[in-house]
Length: 265
Image 1 (cartoon, rainbow, N blue to C red):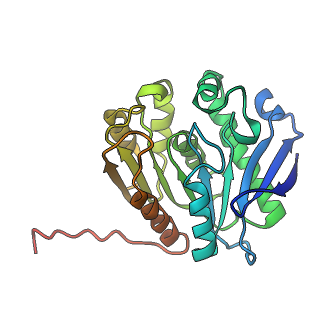
Image 2 (image 1 turned 135 degrees about the horizontal axis):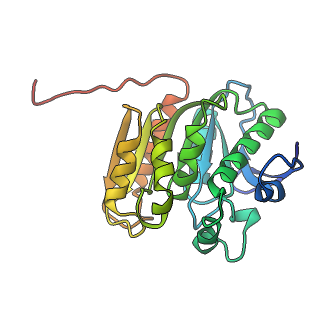
Image 3 (image 1 turned 90 degrees about the horizontal axis):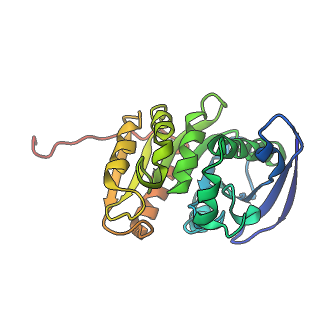
């Protein structure tokens, strides 16, 4: 069991704090709250699409471009958006927060499964309180948002979640996450929905070979890789716009891949 408290948020959102009251979880998951933000349309029902957003290691639930995307989904599509804080971020910041705190958290056994459990807890409470999360789901998460997002998406079918598409990237199997590379590859191998994957060619955190290994491991045949020059955080704005269009188009309809061969024409 768990309880939820709502309070005014930022950028048009409501903040929430979920307190766990069950003992049927790990000691860490049992004691830390689940905190996040919800952008909710005035009119919605159980079929309203919900976009889940995972942020990077240096941010929190309001990290760019989450607020921008959430308000576009709300204004242009009537979709809701749910973002939760990372394990040591935002309203549950530990120590200095950011990458330094995450580095310590990643040494703890079970840190991935506890974060996936946090997502499930948030979805369960949002579903019960606001009648959201029962219809089509999309996922946007780069860097740490992919590291925790892939395991969430891998278990979506078992959890009865209707994930229609995901925008991932700024992550790979080498560098700082090499010790969990096998877990990421196994989770990627279960993904069957459409995926857009963003890559930075001069990424100082994730080498190119790890990027490509993770992208290749995605089981879905409906995937595309967008690579741009620049360091880890230097994503072109056009790629954020592409992710919006990619997710928005797939929440309520199948979008067939049109393969053309202009050379053969």
